[in-house]
Structures are given as C-alpha cells and as structure tokens.
Image (cartoon, rainbow, N blue to C red; front, side, top):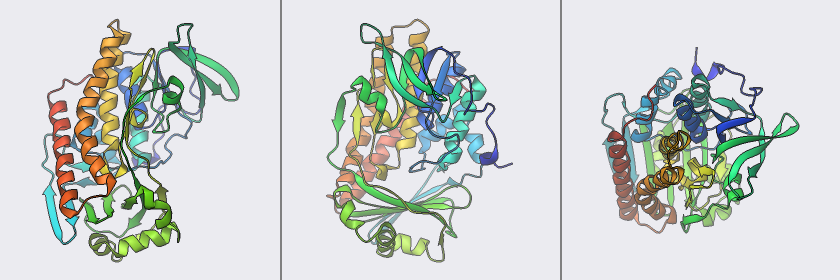
Length: 402
C-alpha cells in the first residue's frame, strides 16, 4: 500500500488533548512534527497542534540535502519516504548560461542520495512517527493565544477545542508555525538578521519528464529555474525572479509568465519537451530571509518560525529537521532538570553557527545582482555550508534512534 494512503495510528482530528504537557508545539508540519517525535521518544509529554488538515499539502521547495537525509535515516523515517516511491537523486546539474556542471551525490551509509518528497508524504510520515512515539498530535485546531504567568513567562496556550475555548498549560511552548509565526509575534521575538531581498517563485508539477534521479538548476542573469523529481512520477518545475519585479513579471498572468520563463531557459526547454502540466501553478511573491531570536522565558521557535531563507536555496526542509534535532535536545535537558537558559542558549548558538555561512551565500543569490560567474561562486559557498552541516551531524551523537 502506498504510504500516502495510510491512516495515522490515531485520529489527529479528534485526538484528546490533556490539560497539561511538558511541551506544547504550535504547528505539526516538518519542524513541529519532528520535534514532537524526538521529545516523545525521549519520554517527554508533548502535544503538537496544527490548524491544517492531516496530510494536507503546503508551499514547499521539496528538496532535502544530505544532512537532512541523514537525520531522517537516524530517526527511522527514511523508509517511509522510500515506501512512498520518493525518487532518490544521485546527480545535481547546474546550468550557468552555456556552461553545465554535473555533480554526483556520493552515497554514505544509508544516505543514498537526495530526497524531494511531497509534503503530503514527508509531513504525514513525521506525524505518524510522532504519534507512534506517544506524542499527541491534533489537526484542524486553532491556537488562539499564549498564556503567561505574573512574571511574563509563557506557561501555556489558549485553543479553540472544537468550538470550546480552553487553556493548556506547558513548561515550554514551541512556535513551529511558519515564517509568519503568530507565536514569534506574540512573544516579541527579535529579528537578529534580515536580508535585503527575496525571490518571487512560481512552480507546478509535470509528468513525462525523464531522469527522475537528476535535480537540475538553470541560471541566466536575473532569473533562476529548476526541476525537482518528486512523488507519483511527477516533477516540480520552478522559476524564480527578483521579488521586487514579481508583480510586474506576473502582470500577464502566472501561467503566461511561467511559460515565458521556461521558453528562455535552455535546461527547462529540453527537460519539458513532451511533458504535461498536471497541477495548477502556485506562487510565492517573495520575502527576505531572516534569523529570529530562537528562545525566551518558556518559549522557543523552530523551523521557518525561527529561521527563514530564500526558497531559491531549496534548503528550508533540511534546516527544519536540523533545528528540530537541536531544539529537542535542549528541551529534553531543560525538562529533565537541567539549566534551561544554558540549554536553549546552546540551541541558538549551534543554529546560528550553521545558519550564518548559508545565509550569506543564499543572500547573494536572492539579490539577483550577480553575473553567471557570481552565482556559480555563491552556490559553491552554499555547498561549503552544507558540508559544515554534514560534518556537524556526523560528529553529533543522536538524541534518539529509531
């Protein structure tokens, strides 16, 4: 049976919510579900609450780099992606105008390549693993506010529980509710760093594209594009333009702008010959990348809530998984009697150590001020940042195994 037809071990729409947990997570997609899974496996009482529907889709760049694949393997979730027939890319192709560079992805242990699952597969796999570990996951439920004590420490959340308002207390509340995080807004999380510009992106899914084991990126001055094989024999095809130009670029309609970009891209024209669009096109007008303060009294942030990079990096999911791994370790230490300030400060320090070189490289691409040699150099910097992540995780003891 294909994984995307499986049901969760618990009905996540009607799962009973207790009055108190060690940790409550707002958001149950990649970052939130992974954090819940790791905490539950460590014996922490945790609930993750999400306003979306179990197994629903969302905007995504799909790709998971080697560091993220390593974590999924350690957690025992990689087999679920394989069972869903997620393609494994063993080659990355970069077209810089007339020049093409092909990079072989070297297998290492269970990390046999790069995975680019649909979010209907990845998020569901992580939710199922969290529920199996003993976490409470509730979908179709809205968090309406935060609860604080007289000193201002966050001590829980307010939810709309099937039409009835109620409060749930927790030692820690985690915001995993995306780049427009209401948790971050409500706690006043400081933006530590914000980039100047972001990409506007349009993407859709095609069938009939050859080479399911090749991820391809195509660049010309002021434009970026690519193809990412994903589930169900489909390939995500994307184009990116400077965010400042997005409205003008889309003036004739998203479909017209998309096809115009395809026709001027050598790599896309060749790959899309004979292919068929099987979805509506989705668009993202762009937002500059940022790094937020990741913790405070009784709260923490993870995933895009804490750290958002331009989608042209295709690295957001990998960052979400790494962030979940780091934050879960810190929260386990704090809940089990350690110094929470030291543990959470260490979480932010490690996150910043890995984020800084990646953000610098991605910001260069997202500014679109490069020539073809310049964007190639920026991607070399991104590659070095990914090696740093890989080496960091290789030398890091797993919090929990599958």
